[in-house]
Length: 101
Image (cartoon, rainbow, N blue to C red):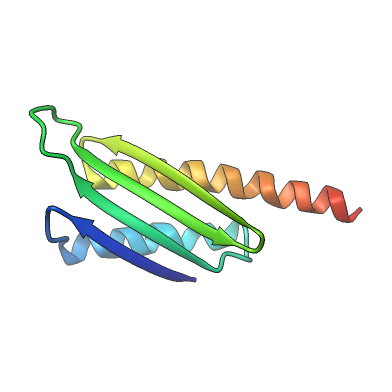
């Protein structure tokens, strides 16, 4: 799977990028037809602590899934977004399995 990453208002460290790639690679266990994904990491300039925003768009054949999460840290937001996407991919796989049979 190809992962395109963009950071807005900051420069990402290598450890954050490694965490993102490891977490995104686990999605292929749930749905093996993932073509690519676009990840946007943003820092919102507010006084609140939950100013880290992660948007993930996953491209699969004939469909796209988009998830946006806002948390205190990028790791927490990435983990939460990936969990949501994994549930959606599992539902998609089940739907396809029911259509075939």
